Structure formats: C-alpha cells, structure tokens
Image 1 (cartoon, rainbow, N blue to C red):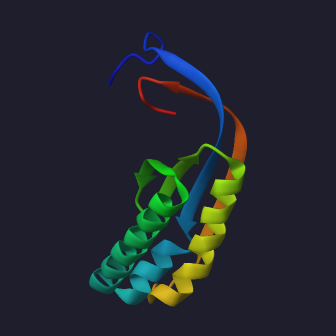
Image 2 (cartoon, one colour):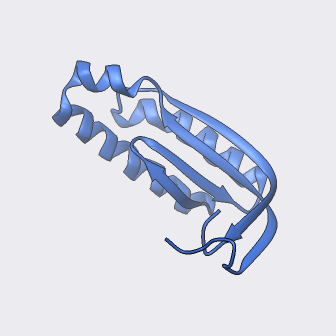
Length: 112
C-alpha cells in the first residue's frame, strides 16, 4: 500500500454519494446466493450505467456498498434520485439507502 502521507495530493470541493443495499444479509439468506448474486449484478450494472449518464465516478466499493464522487451536488442528487427510482423497475428485489456529502475532499495517491 502506498504511503499516503508522502503521496501527491489535491483538495477540491466535490460531492460524495454512498449507496448501500438495505438489509442485504437477511435478503441474501432469504433469496439464496445465486438469486441474490444475480440481483446484485443487475443493480451494479444499473448503478454504473447511471453514473456514466450523470458524470459520476465510482471511487470504491465493498460488498453491496458503493462510494461515488461527482463534481457538483446537482449531478450527485440527480444520480441518487435516478438510482432510487430505477431500482424497483429493474427487477432488483431490494431498497437502496443513499447518503450525500458535499465539501472539500482530499485526494492522495489517487484515493479519496
């Protein structure tokens, strides 16, 4: 892992959105691995397609959680609303929780 204290860095104002599948562990148990995995794959395709449409970048993901960055709060909120509206229409059997933060972000070594 790079030494982030020594890495070149930049600070800029941006908006970060974190999206997470609500209740994924009980949902996995209820649906089973295959069905949950297929639903999660469909959700991630949808999430990334909408990111491309709204000018966002996926910064990190872990399990069913994703952290995305946008140059503007308007684009971030438009993406979040689009994702929330599209999930029920995409045969994805779960809800998504979304958090939004705008502020000065520091990028060191290519990471937020």
